[in-house]
Length: 388
Image (cartoon, rainbow, N blue to C red; front, side, top):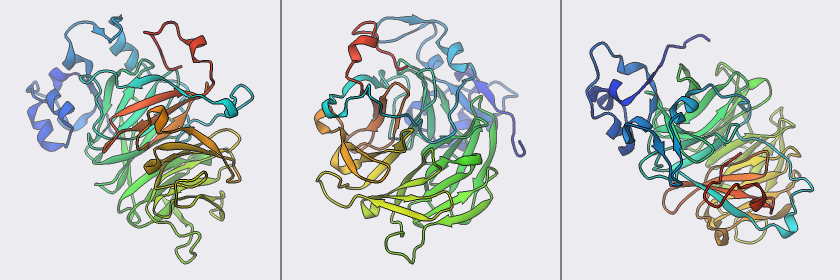
């Protein structure tokens, strides 16, 4: 890939004080940079940080007392089954009884304040084998969590300032919008940095999604634009029309692409979801401002299942709502009664686990809900719950 450069995977001992002067990091990462780097190291190449080394000199032990001496090695292994869309897309089938749905939190992460703490988790993406990526907006980084909710790797680049959303294409290139630096940062899972995408249409890029043929879709909360780009970032077109009241976007925060290659964007300022087809033609408007069923109040994260049904993080109503692909309200999947507060990013796994970032003023954790009503059958014990 053109424009790429080599990025090292570094431990804390390889990091220098000069690094923190050149980049913005959260307090957690600032602690990693307190040691001086050895001569000859190149701070400008840092893209991945092994966070466990700061916390312990020996084996890592989680809250259940389980020792995992191979945690770092395992986490560094190249991932398989990377998804091409912003969120995994799976169907609610007959095994999921929505009428009697009783969602239960089966995992909360990060499960340690020391390792992988989140300042403001704006987005989450499930990868495979229980692994997920979480965007820490205030921390200026993307954290990799394993199936136990433990993070050992933090991704960060010079251009990753106020990251907001994450998507991965079919070539395993991770795309992260960076609002402050007005670009889409790109890097590989091994930390290799790819030239970021910069465009005159970007003022405060927020949502990002990957569609058919790895086309890139980016929403911008300042210009109120939703734009389409080629794989290399070349501008294709603007989606929607500011001249049409029903198509006009106001603070579009997140975007996803369904199996039919429809582009779905959370139109937060209009308290609705807008749907466009693969050619950019307007299809549907879902929701209106309010607290009732089918109504929304500043929708944030959005994803779909394989039947193109739509799942929405209804931010200020403290709930996640479920709509049919035609826009008909079906039900709320989780609400404040299930422990949810101000949901932001969300995604769905193949075994119907719903991952949601949430919190009060800031999203400080990720909740994992089981939507199958048989949570007890696939947990080995009450102390050892993993995301699969």
